[in-house]
Length: 384
Image (cartoon, rainbow, N blue to C red; front, side):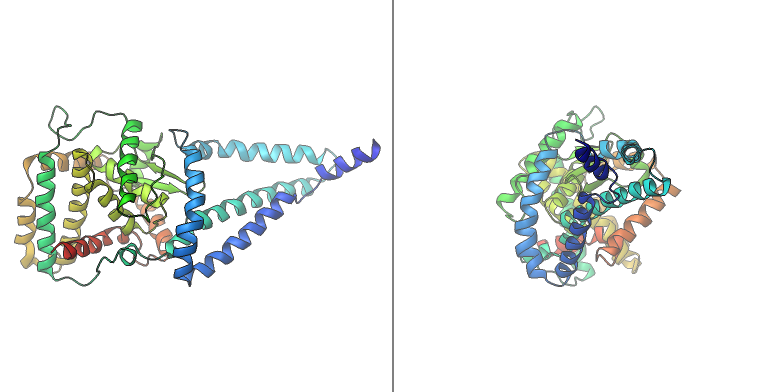
């Protein structure tokens, strides 16, 4: 009995527990895999993204998908209390006679072990996929330099398609703007259904992705100008649920594209557009087209008009193609974001996101979102 108590006491006093060693080993392995994947596109795409990640993401995404709320949001809110509890329990197990330095070391080691595990999760469920084959390569979408006139024609085509799609929408509020009347959770299920249908045409897209999660702290998130975030730790698509539905619908699909393994922002934007614009649901289809239209016209201005003001008339002509009903939705979006004018919070969030994207191989940072138009132009070439 005395010997068992001695072993128990010795175990409770261990500064470095076995799980911390395993966590550190997993981190070293995942880091080595990450650097290997950066220089081996075939492995990253064919072995990792299409097989290993797909299995891991389906399992974890569907486990957390049981809950309609964001599991990671709850974890983050409880994290400070959890860290304090870990420190308290660890110090308690060390015994009153253990030196303070030993207790402190034991707590720090456990924090490092948790951090190493989370870093491994990030690498395995997010970081590696930044280096997979591009969506354009996988589906033979031609990417090339386009003339200003070609860009203009594509924008005109989008304007016309967007206006036509708006005419089919019947889900409107009293002011005539798009409003499904659904709660955010019901809308998330609807978008998930439309997104997963896309996998029939594009098999690389995961057709078993759980619905996106509206965040409880959506209003504070709007101040950062971040519309959604993919969390690899729980493999969840999280969205700012306060957005006007014309934005919320495609941004839900955008985050689901990340869950499906497409981490580059331009590709996630384009996949969101595809999922919505190919939908049989008139409201979802229109929102996808409006999403693409806004990105395309914004880039037409920055790439063409701002450098050659002789194209300003063409820029005005593009907007002349959209109907008054489309303008109602555009005004609703403008009025929403007017509440959250540029602030220190949004600027800091933008700089952080920009640095994060550059760190993961997207050299133009937050501007990579707008590269969606290169895919739109490639799609337009294929239709001509």
